[in-house]
Image (cartoon, rainbow, N blue to C red; front, side):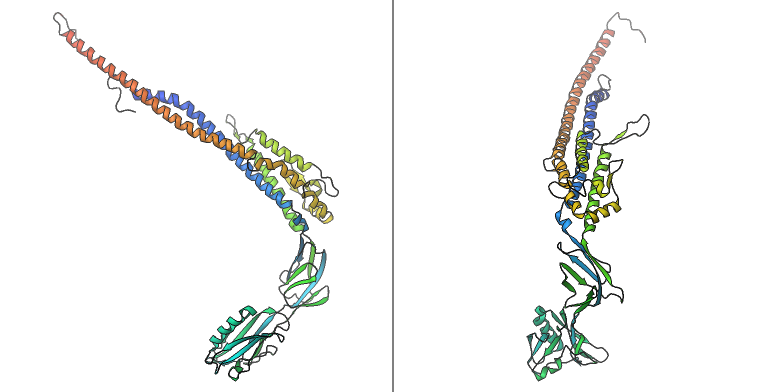
Length: 466
């Protein structure tokens, strides 16, 4: 609107110009809105399809792994007492095991001392871990308190895996220096030796148990004791390698009397099963996504149906057709040739369903055949991947289509700007034209009024009352 218009002619110029501008603008706006909605909907739909394809490709990559089929599982029936892991060369087998005791490390204490104990003279303490150990010498100065001695021991023994602390007894005010070793196993007892009279109260023999306030061990270093199929075994550590070739045992607790646990070493069927199920779930998500994006849903008589963003799209049909063809294409091998041999079948809606019993039997009876069916250059996963890679790779079909739609959407924004500019120019032009007309009509009306007045004043003119 340009100021107050229509004064001269009495015409509603604003309404006329608004109607003419709308008549010019509305069809183009509606066209651009339809194109923008269609392009945005299709762009979003292609993004959803690409996401489902990427997830499917990831699941196939995880299943197309020779390492997955080379893995061995070591399963304990009592993980509170023992866990285990196995290398890919471990032989399958089942073992009855008991854990009689865990390997322990040395914990020792000096004799009880006055809380204000201090070294009476300079000297040395030699701390050993086992009788054959050369030991570590720690210099002690006259006047050093138990806390200062503790700190010196910790500094000197940190690389030996021995730590020291001071324990105080509130009942009698006495204190004891307590040392803990990290290393386990029989013969790894801590001892403290000294040749200096002022430090003899700190000496201790880690092979003698502490009694009362006397020096000695609180916990003696000992080997783990366990059995495998009735054979009694020992280990200086709770992590045992070599007792069963290529299997590492981790002892965690004692088993109950007459209740041995079972350790089963086998091919990693659990891991393979999980990856097969992940593949099926990703495929089903792809099919469900494609069905949703290509569906036409009636919403009632006289109403337009709700349609997916890729209804009638040839790309989806071609892609899914290629994938399905590979899924039913039999492998050239014995044992497992098609998915149905694994209990994986196609349902009416196109998704896959797993018969767990049949899959478990196939893994037990034909584990190696399952591996060659899925993996390798000619395996199912590689063949399907080649079918979809051209669609989702960088610069692939879907990316190119999405870029084209993005260009269209950007072009629509520019067309909207151009339309706004043209409409503004048209509106300004119309107002200028109508205002010029209005001014002319106003002047003509003024002239007409003056002529009428002048003619009415002429002699002989008879005025007629209205």
